[in-house]
View 1 (cartoon, helix red, strand yellow):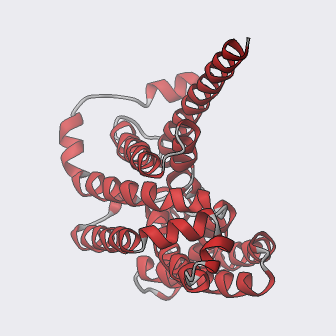
View 2 (cartoon, rainbow, N blue to C red; view 1 turned 120 degrees about the vertical axis):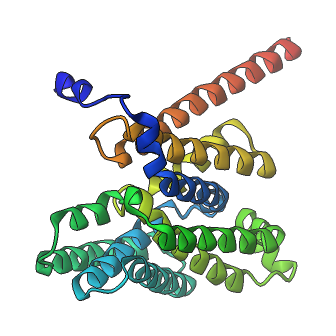
Length: 289
């Protein structure tokens, strides 16, 4: 197995191949920055499972679009926004986001599998919905994805202060007059579109690697919101762009590279955070003594 993997790597004609995936690198980089930004709010609001649930419905929307012959990105976005609104509305009523998400996840995955089983086109298109197909983006798709990522990032920056307040302490924010429910619905819509676009990079099954893992890693080494956001964006950028840069040297799909880089960054941050806590405890013990 190892021999098969190593034999598939080559650096011959690397920069010629890189010029062919320039759009992919730009798109992945911008989506990575957006994912790192929104990922911090995902972690603070404890909605990591919601991301996966929205991705499943997004996968169903993309599969339906593939089946009927319309734009896959648009179908993915419609499915993701519908899922995010549904989860948001139901969560406002029973306050149990995990249960609502757990109900929708298998439903969305089942629909996606049904639509793909009815699709008679190329099998690569089916596989791309699950694991991402960023290498195949053209100029129009690049412009669409980059514009969407910029719009989402700007929207998050505009509502940064009240959204951060509502994410950290929703009860106090509500008491101070912050419209927590409205902010939650706005965030869910932004999250739905972000998930739909991120699915184009890593697929429906691995979307957490772009939207959750970088932010989780950043929060292991700092509790300062601004620093956490910057680190999260940096980690997501390294994972997404680095995954493509490595993938074009071989025949292995992009997704495993992105997920592996994200995981390694997370492990390093956990070790750094644990070492910092150990040093603080030792310093406190020495001061007490």
